[in-house]
Each structure stands twice: as C-alpha cells, then as structure tokens.
Image (tube, rainbow, N blue to C red; front, side):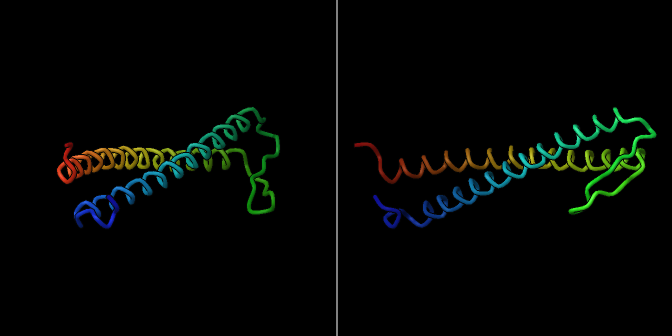
Length: 120
C-alpha cells in the first residue's frame, strides 16, 4: 500500500508525525547547545574563582579580548548561567511535550492503519 492509497486523514497524521519528529530533533539540538554553554560557563566560573582579585581577567568580544573587573565578569557569568538554565528548563518541557505528542500520534496511526488493513 503506497502513501497515495491511504485515506487523507491518515496521510495528514503521517505529515503531522513527521513535523513533530522534526521539531523534536530541533529541540534536542538546541538543548544540547545550551548544555554545552552551561558547561562552558561553569568552567569559566571555576577558573575565575581561582584568580586573585589583583589578576587581570579578560573576556572575548568577537575577535578581541577585553579586560574586565573580576566582579563584573562574575556577575555577567551568573546572569548568563541563569538565562541558560531557564532556557534549558523550557527546552526540556518542550521536549517532553513533543515526545508525548509523537507517542500519541503514533498510537492513533497504528489504530488507523489496523482499521484500514485488518489482518486476514
């Protein structure tokens, strides 16, 4: 049975399932990027805490290094961490919701396909 032989409702469900799966993949990639960003922030914070208050500290701004006050850089890293953590939570919730949608739609599709092509 080809896709053309399927009823329009089933074809629509297949299209929606494909969209959900693509969205889920995109969310998982974004989540992985945020996870890496958090690891980077943790490493930077760790190194910054090891530095003495008199040590010069720098941050990258494009292709240059900018000298900053240790306290200012600590605050900036804390803010970045907060934003990344919030983003991570949002992406995790979206991931769970999409996985649930995929499971539900797969179940509906299985039922639809069984009713179209019952076992002989």
